[in-house]
Length: 246
Image (cartoon, one colour):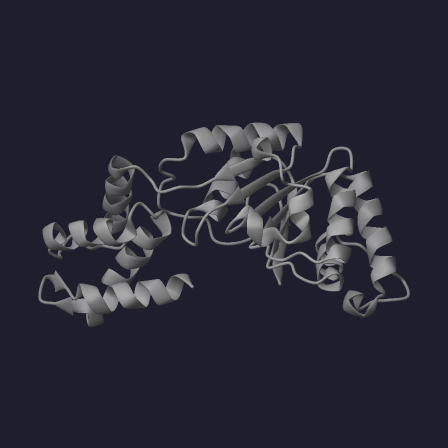
């Protein structure tokens, strides 16, 4: 499990392609973060859930905790404790501390310095983890920002984030937004020498407005193995792009 405590990003390299589309969702999420209100952001792989949160956190200027792939309660607690710089004298190795000790220390830290907790790629939350996250959900000044493929995939956490007013569904970009994203990605990955008149419509048709798919195909297209003169060998590129999104 990878995570980060940060003021404006989740500890990964900053995206270099401009943020395109999602303006309504971005305004909504920035306002929710500033009010410390919990939100569920859902959509298929590549829909831009992570990027939306990055942009919103940067604009809201909120300190936060970011966890990716949180699953069983003990792993979640140990990761949170490490990122919040919690110290337990009896357990220098936090992964060996009992869950009840970690839970008390983490909640005390968040009570002292409340902040949003971003939980990325959540699926099938079990009852013990749900009960812990419920405490953070109701903690004054804290909130949960959760990403998932769908509300139905949350498991027990759906009991907290059931209200449609707390949910942001990320659908496909508009045609104009998808085309603009393609042009930005093509410039970023240096594809100007390729036959973009042939490659562009294939990418846009295959991606169906999914921004992650557009970027993945443009990223692969810079590699010589997918070139045949100025043309892009689209079918093998598309297959490999799909595999990279899984």
